[in-house]
Length: 297
Image (tube, rainbow, N blue to C red; front, side):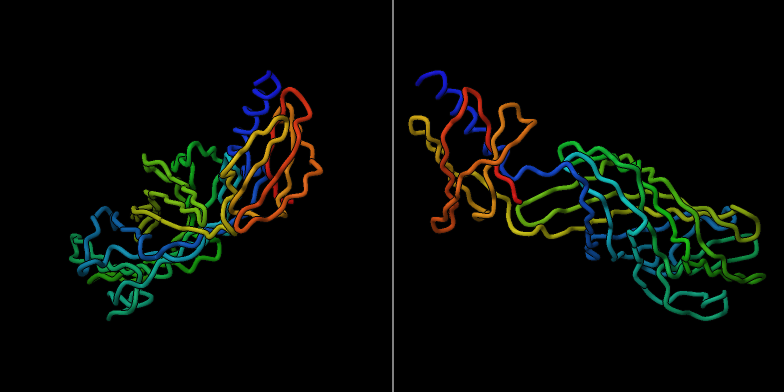
């Protein structure tokens, strides 16, 4: 094998890496929460008194909705269009506005105080999610850069009732995620799965400003379907100065491009052909060092 052919063989092997490579331009995507796996528990305090369960499971609920992001092959950025909505997990006391009785709520809590038990019900809980661009390395990125916030038009409330006082407190503001865990973005041929561990605390006032807290901890798991399957080079044959490539997962709309420096790419005049579930590309080397890739127009 002469020098030219060794370069060509090296270039041909690189096709498998370059084919179907992600674009660096940001793509706006939407991940749908898996409500069977996305859940947040609440803890915290009312006027310094720790929250406890009103009943079994009253401090945990599931979440649904979408996480919106701008995605490149090396970064992810979340925007306020994300909406994470808590599910009603039971009927808890008090009712809306702090009135006596029980009514559907996302969370139900009770706290002991010097005046006796304080019952609380959290309703209409929903969050936005926002961040600056975050580098993604090998499918992982730091979750501590994420900011969770109540929407500006939020109707989230903390209804409370004790022997001496009752009422309702609107919930708002934002919290930077405090988890030490990294978030993950895993990609297969057919979908992407986003996993985020959350640990965020919000403050609000019952008797005085910021005298109470609500801490949300848990995980969010969301996914999105990928259109089609990834293009893969399954066979490379070298015959003199001609290289023949077989690809699966695509079709003849994928065009063969060539480069000598992996930075500047030019289209070839190769006309691909179909053979069953494979697409065949055949071309001739035009230089000592030449690289190839497949690109969707």
